Length: 77
Image (cartoon, rainbow, N blue to C red; front, side, top):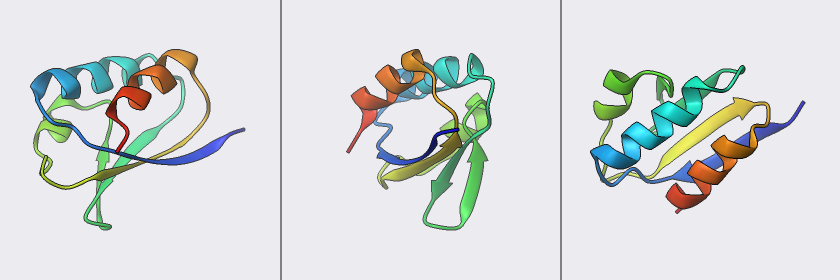
């Protein structure tokens, strides 16, 4: 299994929707870590929209999905 930690930035609502739509299709858990201590489920649109978009966010997940990797590549810092 692939363990990944990637840094992303969500600049607008459209980017948040793309991230959540891609995450929902993944069979593994995906967490977003904000400010090193706030953990949000990446499959929750309300959770993702509640984050501070000024800060870079860290994705933590165990698994691999090509479509998901493609979406987060577009959000990479």
